Structures are given as structure tokens and as C-alpha cells.
Image (cartoon, rainbow, N blue to C red):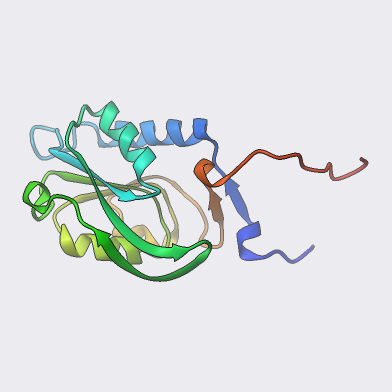
Length: 166
């Protein structure tokens, strides 16, 4: 068997798949908000959480949508996360009734930072890795820690040589 780099153990997600999985996340969250099952706001963790948050907000008819921007990656290398843009804290407060949405939890470090600002929020991700699962209240699909998820907003279609022949 040939050795692979960590990012070569890839899980490729299409636009259709992220849409289906984000809708599944919305269905899982439906009726579980603290206000008779409703959520008062969605906060997307930018940038990866924006597409899933939009879909969840649409499916659950949540009209208050904001973002928190946390920088922890430069391409494929991870560093300590830091918040570079906060949501309207007068609206989200301690997070009560707020749904925080991201595409993926990896190590959980980004969500630790987010939770420190909105400790009572419900955190939901589409995909989860084992190291970060403890930071997430709801998710759809778990992948192994050594899997690199290729999201559609990071990819372009191109020709690939067949394994045999030409």
C-alpha cells in the first residue's frame, strides 16, 4: 500500500451533498429551540459556516442571521484561533436561543473560542471529527480525524487521468 499525506485521505463534498446534509441538520434541529421549539437567531462561523447557516436559517424560518469570524487556518495549516469579527452581542447575548452553525468541527479549538463568548448557544456542525465532537451539540456526519474534507467552495472541476490506460 502506498503512503499518503494526511490531506490525501479526502472526503469530497459536492454542492448537492452540502445542501442535503445542511437540510438534514435543520431537520434535526427543528422544534428543539428554547422558544416553543424556535430559535431566535443563527450565527454562522465564517467562512465555512455561511452556506450551511443560510440553508438552516431558510429551513427553520429564522430571520435573524449574523456571523462571527474566527481565523484559525492559513490554507491547510492550523494556528491558534482568534475572533476577528463579532456578531451583534446585544442580539445574541450569552447565546440563549442562538444557533451557531459551522461546516466542520476539527479539533474543537475554534468552537472553544466561540463558546467562550456565547456559552448558552446551541452549536451545530454538518461534519464532525472525534477530537472536536465534545464542542458540538448537534452534527450530521462524523469523519475520522485524519480525513481532510474538500468543500465545494474550495474546489474546481478538472480532468483526472484514469488509473489504467490513457
